[in-house]
Image 1 (cartoon, rainbow, N blue to C red):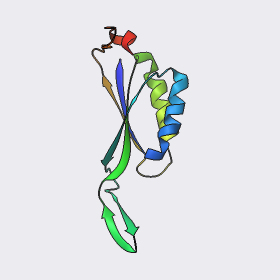
Image 2: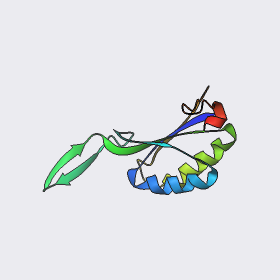
Image 3: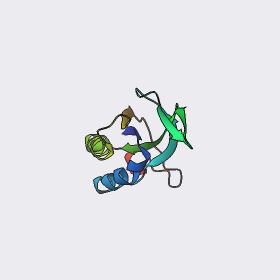
Image 4: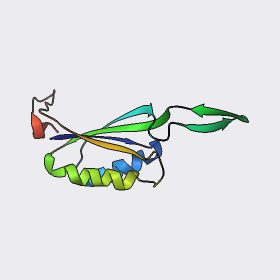
Length: 112
């Protein structure tokens, strides 16, 4: 099993969720986060005053999938979240040793 963590632009969340559902992804965790990458924030104008925004709002998606779905899920996220502009985000993949569904006690892939 793998944990796929993706940092994406907030307005792409619904598109990404819709792309993951047909692949068999049954659940995911979404967090509102702030951060910056190479763009180092951005300059915005509010009531005529210009100011620097150091941390930009992003969405962090976390989904655990069986090893066989990893490439499809990565492709779906990368394709759907892509705007072609700086700040589109990143995808990270990590190993998951064990998963347990608390309610039923199911483990590993049955717990997903």
